[in-house]
Each structure stands twice: as structure tokens, then as C-alpha cells.
Length: 147
Image (cartoon, rainbow, N blue to C red; front, side, top):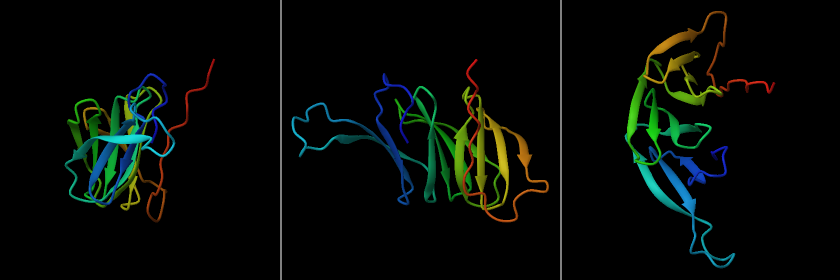
């Protein structure tokens, strides 16, 4: 996932089956195309299952991770600290997204449910009535219309 702003020092955040996220930054010492474009900056650890998805805030300072350990985590990318662990899914969490204003979080998973959370980690609503009959594999908020 790539931040939406050009002034962010983060260029890439990756999620892996090794149960971690890695933040990557531009290799400022690169002088040729043969050299590494980006270098790992920080490894974010804490999940006990595969990390399936990652989403970034608009300013690229925070990330969400969705994991097979049934949790979502909110990370500070500058410090590597996990601010909040979101618990409430009964099975693996497969997808996660920030709302356009970064104040709400949407997650979906193998329990066939979508959950809307506040940034404190409190589930404010579960969307499952007359809904999916199988895994929720991807979730997204609609962008805010430009006026």
C-alpha cells in the first residue's frame, strides 16, 4: 500500500504470511538502476497469524493490518508501536479500510461479517443482516465527493 501524499517518508508498507508488516523507504544512496530502490525501515510484529491486508491513513502516518489471528491492529508507522488491537471477528480478518476522514475503520472476514470500528477499537456496528453467505474478501469506503 502506498500513502496518498508525496511528503510522506514512507513509500511502501507490505504485509506477509510471516505474520509481520514491513515499512519501506526510498534508498537515498542509490545512484544507479541496479541498486535497491527501497530498503526496509521497520518490521511491525505482534500478530499471531498471517497478515492478509494493510491500509494506510491519507497522510501515511498510520496503518491498519488485518490478520488470520482474528484481529485488526492500528500501527504508528513512525514508531512501529501498535496503538490498538481490534477484537470482535470470530474468524480470520481478510480486509480492512480507513474511512476518508480516517475516523472509522471497516473490516471484513471469514465470519461473513463487516464491522465498523472507531479508532479506539470499539465496534460501533456489525453489518451482517441479509448479507454475505460466505467470506468477506474485500472492503472499501466510498471516497468523499469533491465539492
